[in-house]
Every structure is written in C-alpha cells, then in structure tokens.
Length: 214
Image (cartoon, rainbow, N blue to C red; front, side, top):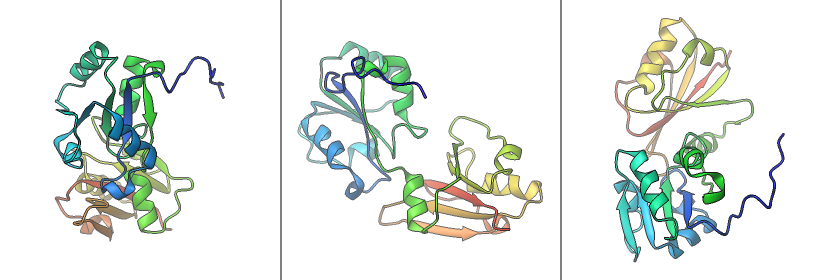
C-alpha cells in the first residue's frame, strides 16, 4: 500500500469540500458533514439535495448536467468556502472521485457519508463481508463477471435497474435472490426480496443486492 505523505495533503486549506449526505434522510448526516455545510458560503447540489437545507443562509447553486462546468466554476472560485453535496458516500461511485481527479486531492476536502449500500445491508441485517460493490451509472455491467460472485451490491440508474438486472439473471438461467431498496431512508422507503421472475418493471430510486443463496 502506498503511504500518503501527510505534508502533501492539507485538509484544512481547501475552500472546496465534497460532503456525503448519507442515504437521504438528514438524520444520517454526520456531525462533520453538518458542520461544513453550516460554515460554507456556497452550497452546490441537485435540487433534491438542496431542498434538504431550507434554512441555509448562503448561496445555493443547483448542480447542472455538466460536471465539467462545475469543475470550471470551482477552479475559478477556489477562495470561496464551498460545499458540493454528494449522495451517499462521495467516494463510492460518487462525485468525490471525479472532482479529486480533476482538481487534485490537495485542493479538496472529502467528508464521507453513509452509503445507500451500507444502509440497505444494515436494514436487512445482511453482512457486507465479501460483497462485490459496483454501479450501473454510465456503464454496461459485465453480468457474466458479476454473477460469478455470490453477493453483489449495485447502485443503479434509469437505464439499468432492477428489471434489467433480473432479465440478465434469467437469460443465464441463474438462481438468485434480489433485494431491492427503494427511496432508502425516506418516508416512502420500500424494501423487496424477490426472485428475478417476480421483479417489476419500475422502481423508484434504488439499490440492488444480488444473492446466490445455494
């Protein structure tokens, strides 16, 4: 493992912080994350994320479709104390990795949050040990590779969600159980445990766990 030189990363210096919100409900926001949000001048996030902070006194900037545009704005406003909100954990298929690679880790403070994956495993009292973690956001998963693992957790998107995952399982004639968590931590949260043939066409914002229970 490569050591990190403590003199090369100053976590108190950057004006930009990426803060993980947790699965959604503000009860899961860490004290460190809340403190940074309370002290920043500009809060950047999706409309849904920004709506979690109705009393924020500073400037709210909605996150647009262009992450390159966000990088340009942050680069031009490095002295402004800014928080970029991330769903879940910024470094688990989140925006933290993207910004770190483009701005440099020395120009960024990243505060982790509870991921929706962690939350779902805890809600169903399922061990995360030996789980393979992945995402279908902007990628075409290799299902032959994924289904070689006995336990897979996938953060999904609108293109490849529970129904598409179920079709891939059935096409390979695999016996699996799917745990589907919708709107995790929100009042309308729902968790389903289904065989692939019973998976519906549409689910709200979700995370999927695929289990080989043989």
